[in-house]
Image 1 (cartoon, rainbow, N blue to C red):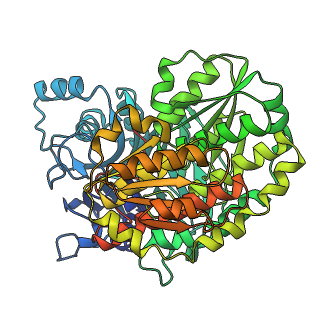
Image 2: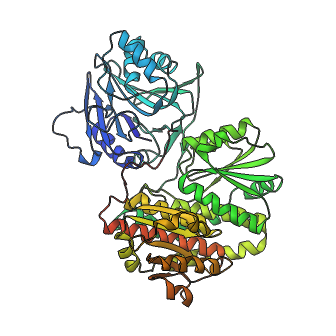
Image 3: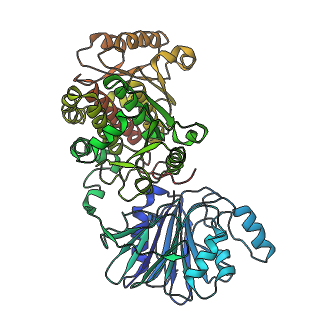
Length: 580
């Protein structure tokens, strides 16, 4: 997680770094810091958010600098643990994203050599290693330092003696933007695109040193020539444009995100052949992406008959892959550490792999056999909404190609169904949920993962404890939690699950728990039992899954808004989870 930015060029580095870090706050926001080099290194850092930063003359003007916004792993959020970190002499400053796994041993060795540490972080060892290894050559020194590191890192280093920035990457993203007389380096594209669209995605093992007009990349001891790629990106799409929060803006962008992804022309024919030749498909993902994978399983098995398994990415390392199955890895950022580890494990066992991601040039896209890009566009709010809907579009497209023409016709209703949901009034349901300290969300069949996703969204942004269950599992333990203070969110679409869900609702009502039901407006049986019905017109299973999901996102948003939560930056979370 964490966001890092480096700049060298003709602009005032401080302003570039501050704006860049604001754009990266979705990666972490418990502390921040800047370091500027102008013959000497000046550092300013503090707990809190970069939006709280004010230049009170504590840092001089300069054209070379690095910055950091943090998601804490080692050491509590505080000024001393904020990046940048410096060495004992103050001649080097570093920012780091990732985890140095052998930091304890390195710290002990450095301490025994006389180094004094000022923080509780793993990252600070990098600054002291630079002090040990520096020989006047930034590239050589960088290679010496990273040769002693174990773990994941995207690291930027500045020196008081060099008008340049050193950068290194291993299992954490780092992108270099090459402008006219300036270079900006960051954790992703968002801070870069206001200055240049010519970018280079660093790869694992890369060491780079750059100034305003020079760039050198070395990997494995050899110089590497990587021409920049042109990135088409609309900065305006990353602004709130009148909405109160990015999350609700992105919810309203979901119909177009679904349509763009569905209409995108990629190697879907090859992916279809890839899957149909396999004995089964293994879907590996985390969080919201895992719920998308669960939905895919239900739809794929129903419409194509191809067996599908799902596995949480962090648990896949304990699963024995079969070379006869296709492994589909889903990651919104394309940098999720657990997903990347799973992909590499699948390839080690000679499985054929497909990556589904929203991020061009991300690590996962360079390692998978095939890539399917979603067309969600930038998603700034930490809670995934339109990226999830775009994942559903991609997965439903795969189902339709494997399941035949009938599936393709069903997909034509999805956009209209989502658009209708955006007009819903969820105020009454919001009032019930906002009073609760615990919520339960239930569904059956393909709506079971919808219930899981609804619970996840509620807990992420409202901080209300929410758990999702299969409707049939309620009686196997969770029913003990039911009371007048424990609302239940129930997904009750028409179809094969309806009658059993009605039985579940009656069990809930007999325990006097309030029920918020998502159901067809003509379902009078549901209306008789539930306190509130959020009406969603039934079309077909593809459209209903998308519509019920979007309605649940809107309910979570409204509950969090009523409770005054920090919706776009919920506590303790980061959007791109690059640590295991």
